[in-house]
Figure 1: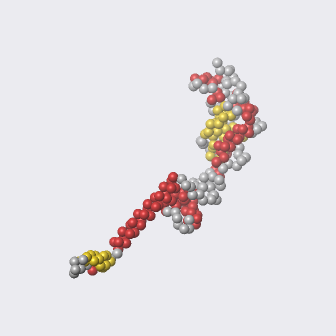
Figure 2: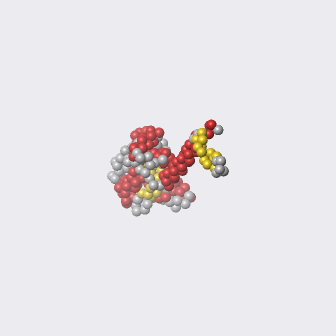
Figure 3: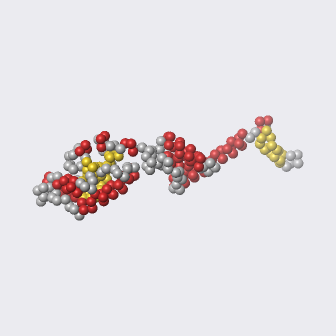
Length: 243
């Protein structure tokens, strides 16, 4: 039977399944939605272990090292009531949230074959200000027309002996256009880059064959074979327009 107070005391040495949601915008903007990540929380591990786990998830977002982790102390708390969780209130707030699990919730979870520790009761939130949404140093950028053009210019300066073909140059421009602003150029030796180089080689060969064919078509002087008086054939260059 479930405990009359819901789930009973919070386990201290057992992993609890929590959830981290990353909100795009500051908390004052009241942003909606955002990607969610499962995260395991253990009361005895303390706040610093939790922060290290969350930092590994949000580090690629370009947030400062002193980013805040917000916590929802009740299931129905609105976003404006989320508050930063710290080392000082970590244990108290987790106990408060756990104590608010109801008997009805526990019964429903048991019917689903779940224990309270397997339900995402503990909820954390990190807010990513919109000022960090584009073009931060150390972050992948969106490949815009301007960033691609700038990457092409830099690649052209690097490849001043014109060893790269047009297709490979365009592919590398897209890769480098997405690199963080100020990052050095990269020329990856991956399958896509090698394929682009092979396409450039095939294209150059076709262009060369087309040029040779065009030269032959445009050449007005062609050799013709004439039978000489002694019966031998000789080749003599002739202006074909005169024939």
